[in-house]
Image (cartoon, rainbow, N blue to C red; front, side, top):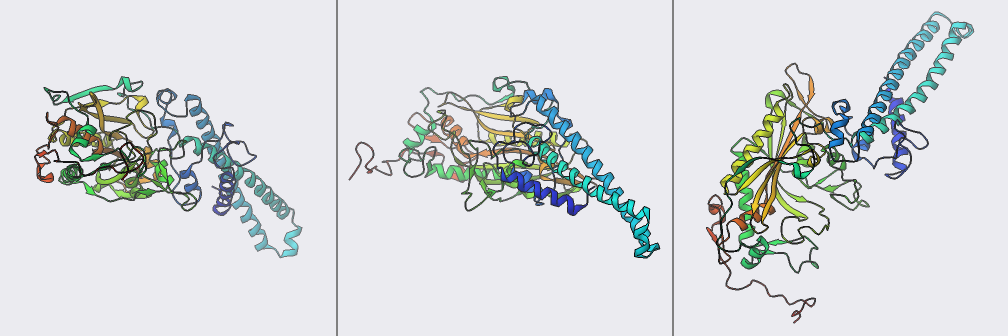
Length: 508
């Protein structure tokens, strides 16, 4: 290995040079240096910067575990040829590091030889010795060679990580191949509610009951915002309490996490906040250089375990967290009204850290999370189906993902209300989440996540499936003690009357 100070200095210099070109064009590596692939520079990586600055351990990526065929079947910026180039860069990087290690060893031997000669002779005599001159000359040559190799190491390191961090996880062999249309229905639970009248959508129901407001908010909070009041607000709290109580009774560890997190944690989880348009909300970079709002508690929980090791006997660790989630939903024209696609909602999230002694532990935990989701949704009386999601619907970290879609009569179709993913060691290799095995050695843990209750979409299913002909809504029996109602009544009159100036009939 290279001398720690020299290697660190070279890496810092390379990092400074790379940050100087930002996330734009230019060759991979430091300015003026061609990297291993020679392609265009990837977008900026907060995780890579975080590591290069010594704030976290270096990701231990297993690029050889991913095949070109798998990569071609997944969504993402990289294709099969990119994987070949990344592996080639890694091979060159490994060779350069081996050459550095050999030179460092020789450097130590040369220094030892010089010290031995100086110990056996006085200064005037030793400087006249041919052996001393040869050793000093070789020492100078080694320093020059090391300087060149350290520059290559820094450039190749950057070339490798900036692209390898964009690679997806490998794929479970039973995952269907293709787009969303290829999702495999594994199970259908319950029956569709039958109505002898035309069912309304949740927004019409909510407005009729005066418990959801989404209109006349452009001047208050913008598009895709909403208010819940009265029984809808009670339902939100009831759903959170119901899901939390269910999971706490199963031994889950409750946790409250930060909403604001660094980009390194997002990227370590397999999310890409640097994309344009970004899927996350970023806090004013003029004041806060690197803070974004989390779209799921998964990020904050993973950050809790980042750079930490867990004892084998304490695994699996199951965590539950209720948090506000912030999603930068784009104006695609889909779901322009209602609670299906909104910028902010409450969600109860499950997250698990488990061992990888046999390799089957995370699959078993995924099945456990799925069973918990089924128990929650069945007790709430929902009709739903479980889907094994195909390759193009897997996010970067997912090895396998199950979605649950509930029937939403007002929409006339199923809508996703939860998902559960096995991320194997994808996140732990990036975030340095470890556990001590039976022999006391540190190994990468596996992580699993799942939605226990996404409140906004659960409200859609519950309101639409439990509506009555007169516009009232039944409260599911499991929630009645928490809400204090068995039926949400219609109000005698609207709570508010619009008097603003920007719509017909407004103004004082």
